Length: 135
Ligand SMILES: [Zn+2]
Image (cartoon, rainbow, N blue to C red; front, side, top):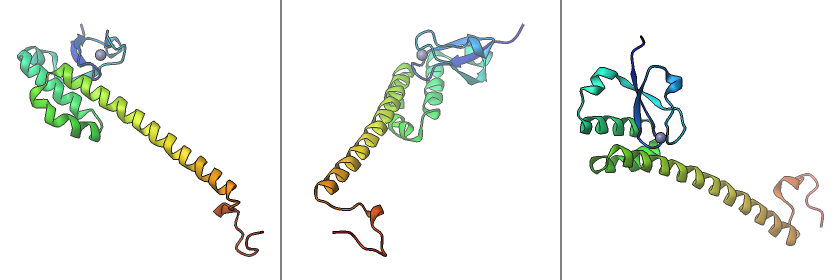
């Protein structure tokens, strides 16, 4: 029989024991769970607090550097579930923010083109240095 391994969900902090990685799917989030680099027996020997501590550290370590910076100060006072939720939410907001920035960039470009058109200005890339600008 294959040995059990410990897997955890980085979205919600749920953890469980599985023989096969393909079975390690979070029942709440329906996402593939990540293996924990500790043996099943070693994990079982830990206290609940130590498990929380270990999992919180793993969740923080697997986040983007930006999320890590935001989570680090909260680690002392929060449980694994809170750390996981916060990390997941910050990542979501980060992606949302990225999309918004792209939208603003696009709007800025569009508005700028409209302003140029209204003022009869010629975009930089249409200027031919040899011929100058047609009046
Ligand atoms: Zn989950």
